[in-house]
Length: 118
Image (cartoon, rainbow, N blue to C red):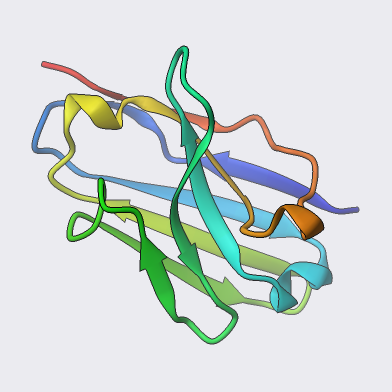
């Protein structure tokens, strides 16, 4: 069964760090570029980081230098991680993982809430 489960969110003070995890169940994910997305209240969902099967990464300007995406390609489950450092209040959002390309997009998981506040 193909599914995406995100975890690791929480409440953190500005300047703090969090590490998000995504378990993408289904061997098909091994072949796709995977991404972390976020959606803040009243805003559209946006891609913040992506990683290819071989480990090449790309970041949005808003998180470049602060976030690091990584992945572990196991046979039946791909794990995708997002290390978030120097967090800012504007990073507050629900974070999701999925395939980068809408063509191969799977149903969204429940996401994980990240709140950056003092």
